[in-house]
Image 1: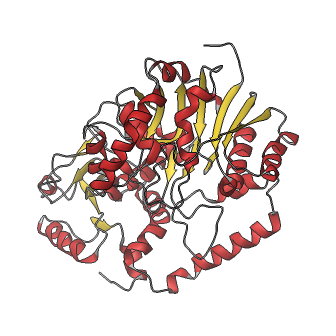
Image 2 (image 1 turned 180 degrees about the horizontal axis):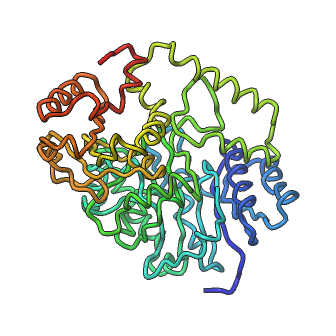
Length: 443
């Protein structure tokens, strides 16, 4: 590796992503002391936006910019699928080894991010014998068909390419671009034939570099998307533990707004992910700042949220909007369980993982997880093995049980089971009861 102490960061964007990328850059510079060189890959970025991006250097003297014009067309292997919001710029990260023959390493970052910590921490991570380092994808790990088509075993991780540390020497050694050119069209056609979601260059990296990718802690790419986290949970020894997700939730280094709507667009569409206001904190540091206008937008959005309880909504949508505040309140209430009993959680769906992350951030940990469905028993939720509810039978003096059924009818059935086990109404609680009350579904 060279002795260059500058941190080299790569973004690929067009005019539509210029503002978000500028906010991402400003957030990085605000939290990093070392010299940062931004390499901007573009094919039609306007001169005005180039000037605005590099204009950050007036405020942050340790940042400098280099623009790389990519003279590529959609005839050169860009298979975009049906995602109209995805542009050919997403493929540019596959060319990094060729674009930067004079660099040993770069960090690639998507523009729809804010950086809340010192990027030096990520820059200094060793890749060991791997070619690239990335974080697990919180969405696609749930798509078994994608992993199958890419040749990834169920127990292994599918990675998100929105934040990636590339060893460019190794990228050049395996001739990544040649492999992409050889395999891209065939793989794309396979996905289209199977009607599977196509994730572009990310699929290519996961396929070509399979088992040569180092898992990064999720705090380096904390993916905020619609509703609850889809927390990957697998048998791979590198799979993330509860403490990793808790750290990412509580102290994220990079927050990645992976789904629409992006925080740059506060509209009448609800932003279901948390942390979106951090975008505006950093936007105020950029030439795109319109502080008074943004304050009005945020106030208007909160008025919309405050009116939501009086609006008729589908229950599922209501849960996705309210889940975070609900879990925080539950955690505060459970810090001192009745008579210092052990805490048992009944349920093994994805929501339980999100709940446990918020609980852990508030120093609340379950002692047992149970589920009545035989297919869920003996499965893993983080380091817990899901047990049969029968372990609770006659142990109401020992356990306080939190029921995590989202819907009222199943919750009532489980309540009856607990009562048969000897529990009274003070010895268990329904996690989602406050939301049912708003939806006029009383216990």
